[in-house]
Length: 114
Image (tube, rainbow, N blue to C red; front, side, top):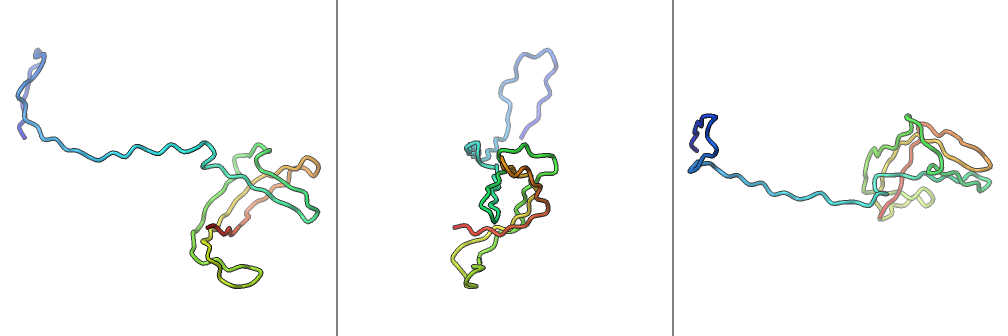
């Protein structure tokens, strides 16, 4: 590589030696707008369904993936099932038209996924 000094009156500089380095570029994949969003549904013992999507969430509302694991133990049978699991922690306000807006704080969930 060679450096050249050009005074400020020069309009261009020709025959300048330089080293070219290339880096592969993978453009980001554009995802649908619903990726990165979470909807929490809760059904109480009376069958009332509460949803997080119908309630504006406050600043303290969070949803965090704590861990991915490879072994899901079915809580009913106690046997290992061929699922992966996601361990989650979340804080959210849910909404039900009749029952109101309960706050769920410091909740932990284990979700089986295929």
